[in-house]
Length: 190
Ligand code: THU
Image 1 (cartoon, rainbow, N blue to C red):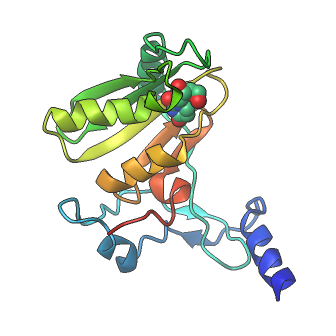
Image 2: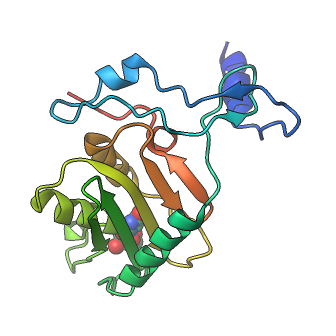
């Protein structure tokens, strides 16, 4: 039983078969939408690309390649990284959050001598945006440490993204564009 389950899970993470041309879209079903917290429920825009491939017969959530727009947003996050206050870890992070209004909100990590009092760059960007009255967002770019290496957001930041963003929300990292559902498939909600 455990082995069978392990095989299934491992299969899910196998590389996509290059020559498999099965088409699918990100599996954004109604159950995902119904579980969005109140106030932020929105119809998912079916604007994401159709991609090809399958793992063990199941649709594979897509990580999309960087395009010019996402590279430009990464550059903005990279510039913001320079403002980080990260004297304890030495790991500077910058985030650029695009609101549906078109406004870009910036955030950097701000550490503290009392370590847990520090805040990540992503949440700092969300704090700036939410307190400016924004509620709907269209993309987030993150640049942390070596800008050639993806800085995957921490679990708390993923949960904050899930509060305000739909499952197809694009999270732009150094190695590609991750739909939020890929990074945070089962967010907590009340
Ligand atoms: N950090 C971020 O700002 N964002 C992330 O996605 C991961 C971690 C910060 C928190 C802390 O200031 C430093 O990086 C090292 O953990």
